[in-house]
Amino acid sequence: MTTPHRLVLWDIDQTLVDLRGIGAAWYTAALAEVAGLELRALPNFGGRTERAISADILTSHGVEPTEENVRKLWLALIAVSESHAPTLSSNGRALPGAKDALNAFASHGGIVQTLVTGNLPEISVHKLTAFDLHEHVDFEIGGYGSLSAHRPDLVPAAVGHASAKHGTEFAPTSVVVIGDTPDDVRAALDNGAVAVAVATGQFSAEELADAGAHTVLGDLTDLAAVRAAVLGSAD
Image (tube, rainbow, N blue to C red; front, top):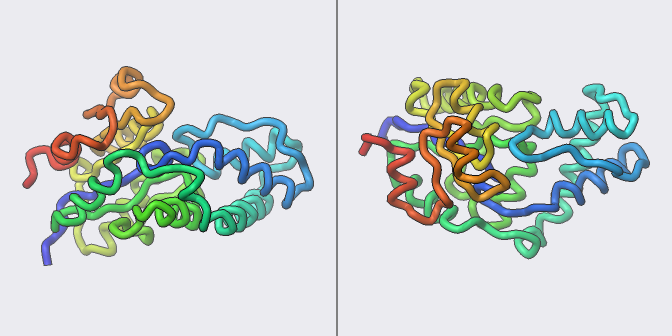
């Protein structure tokens, strides 16, 4: 068995899939279910974690963001996501090049692929499975938005899980974070990891470069460029 020498941590929304608008719809249903309230305002979602977003929504609607209330909201979100899972593919799309990139790295014996995403674990599965992007992602070792309101905290969590599972230490420079927001870039840089940004979301290539990304790609369609950004001088 090949010992892995790269850990690729994918973001989901606007990096691998485009499901814009679905979060607002799901929070509308979840808040009504949990608190009987109509959703009046949404915080910015881009690059943030579910723990941060949920706390903001509860607070702005007069509900104390206790751990109990946050987790009730999450359970409602997961239920809404599960009920919509069969129709997700008709409400969004896999972003260009996403599947080819996942497949390419899966065929490389030295790479482990998982997630660092603001999503909850269950919702991550629903979103990627809907577009057949789940096969090569190890969901068990990801860093998810339930862990912390601070996205940089998700990277060492995923690295620790991956190291334990594979019996090898992933040095910071062998960890690659791929995402579409400055928060994804900062999460990588704060942990000494490689930051690969894709300008497929709300932030421009210039903004992502200014955030400090080591590589900025227009999208994932140039597989040679994606490989170079992730592998560097590795085989």
